[in-house]
Length: 85
Image (cartoon, rainbow, N blue to C red; front, top):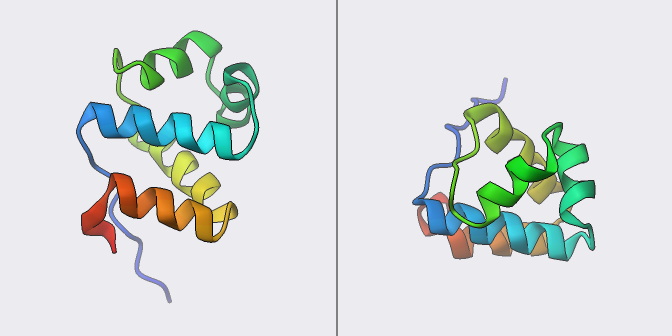
């Protein structure tokens, strides 16, 4: 049985940068990524611009998308969250 990992934690600028890079890597607009994460466009926009922080559930979804992008997602994780390696 796999042990659940703690949710990603970082300062707001890193989270916003991570979300923006993920969106660009997946070639999605803010609207489309927001829909994939089950949030509104304004919410995603606030995350990217550092005006709000994603909930733990949203961070789980973001982490799942990062894992779906393979090696590039792992690189983004290591750049924004060096302690997760």
